[in-house]
Image 1 (cartoon, helix red, strand yellow):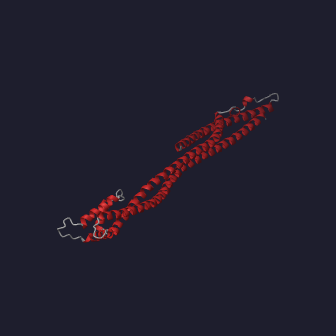
Image 2 (cartoon, rainbow, N blue to C red; image 1 turned 90 degrees about the vertical axis):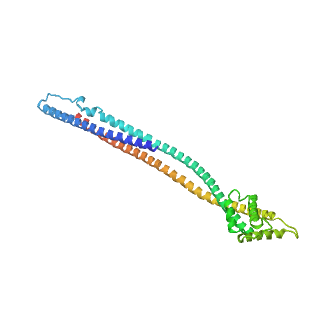
Image 3 (cartoon, one colour; image 1 turned 180 degrees about the horizontal axis):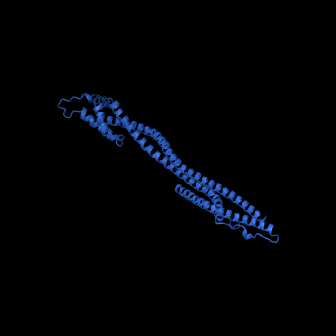
Amino acid sequence: MKEVMDNFNRQTQQRFHEYDHRMKTTRQKCKEQCDKEIQKIILKDKLEKELMDKFATLHTDIQNDAIPTCVCEKSVADKVEKNCMKCTQNLGGIVAPSSGVLAGIAEGALYVWRDAEIVAAIAAAKEAGAAKGAAVGIKEGIKVLLNRLNTDFGLSPVRIKELESVINGTNYTDVTFIYEAIYTTYKRSCVPVDVSVRFTVADTDLTFCESVWNQTLAVSQRNMGTSPLPIIQKTAQKIVSDANFTAAATAETATEEATTTLTAKNTGEVNATYMGYQTPIIASIVAILVIVLVMIIIYLILRYRRKKKMKKKLQYIKLLEE
């Protein structure tokens, strides 16, 4: 639309320049011709008066065909000027309403586009916020899980580091995977492979082994052995449940915050783009109004000059009739 307006403005200015150049040349020719004809008529009238004084019988009547052609007949300049006045008047009545209609259409299209883009921006913000919230929740859930493995089982930082390398966002809520990993660590660190060989628990695993033994002894009956597997499984289930709850709560909060931030950012970008599109439309409307104003000024100037010329013609005719 901006390109169309620029093209229209450029063609209109070019035509006005061409018209003004032709009008100047034509007016100059007409003026020179009128001056010559008027001089001839004045000279003729002067001669006729002198002859009337000398010859009383002489009767002279200036006919209508003696009036200069540039006064009686419409010259090319007059026709061009008249057509230009009509064109200016018509364009003034057409361009102004048309500019309003075009501006309304463009503005309406922009409003529709902006509303659609804002809806899409909000949807994208919700989707991105949910993804970001889920990632933050998983990270916090794994953190809680590892901390609880340290506090509830007494796992050393070395064992926590080993588990951290295999725990991810998919398996950190898998109770079976967690208690099997802990039980495997227990068998490797706290149970001798060969009872005939002296077995010593490493210092890094001593707290972990004692924690499992104490929990097992607390639920075992007198003179009856109890496997630590149910104890590990039950404790792991509680730890995973707490980690899952923390992850869900953290994800919800992070999702809300991220969605709010991204919504403000995306809608701000849409509004900035909307204003960027709106500025050329406003500039085009202003340009059209300026063109209309110039046309009106040209029309008024031509009208004034035409009235002035008609007044001068009437004076010439009156002078000749006298």
